[in-house]
Image 1 (cartoon, rainbow, N blue to C red):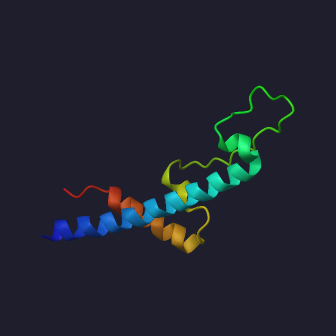
Image 2: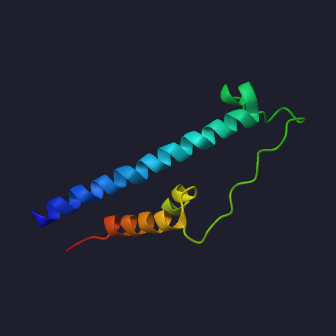
Length: 94
């Protein structure tokens, strides 16, 4: 019974993290659409257009890849809480 309630709590935490990922992805897609205009939105890569600007540089890499990048836009206390929650969610209880 205790394991089931912790599982449900962790699922809720994961849903919140996933929601943040979806929101961040939407923001990035909107920025890309603005940057590339209509031709980028239609699926054209622009590789054959030598006059087109190169894409913006990727964000700085960190030593911790994965879920940490999903919380870039949140305050550090929230990022820390999300990281702690994710670590708790991924920790297996035996």
